[in-house]
Image 1 (cartoon, one colour):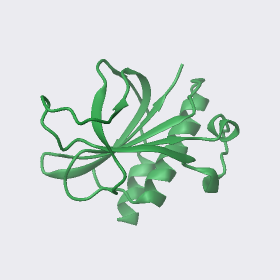
Image 2: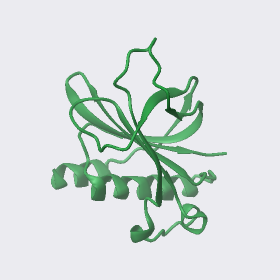
Image 3: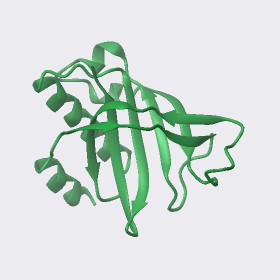
Image 4: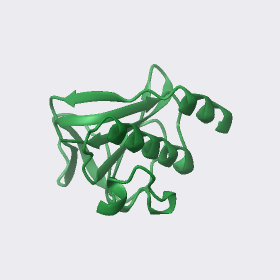
Length: 144
C-alpha cells in the first residue's frame, strides 16, 4: 500500500469543494470497523495549521470526535456529530489509507492550500467510506 500512496502523493491534486448540506453521523467512541462511512474530526494546533512546513508529529492534533453513519436516515441517534456544510480544501484517495499515509496527505493538502493563498481553519476531517465496493479516504479542511 505504501507504493500506491507514494504514487498518489506524486499525482496529488488539491480540489475545492462546497458541501451544500451537512453529513450527519452517530457519535461513537469505537474505532472504524468494516465497510461503513466513518468520520474523524481533529483540532490542529493553530501554529501548525498555518505553517508551510508543519511538524508531522503535531498532526493531526487533538481528536474532537468520531462518528459513524450506520443508522437509517429517519432514525437519528440521540447524539450526532457533523461534517458541516461549507467550503473545503478536499483530497480523495481510492484506497483505505492508514494513519501515517493520511497524515502525509493532510500535510500536503495544507501546503498546497497555503501555496494557493487559502487560509485553512484549524479543523481537519478525515472520512473513510466505500464507493463502488472499494475503500476511499477523504480529507476535508475548511478554509476562508
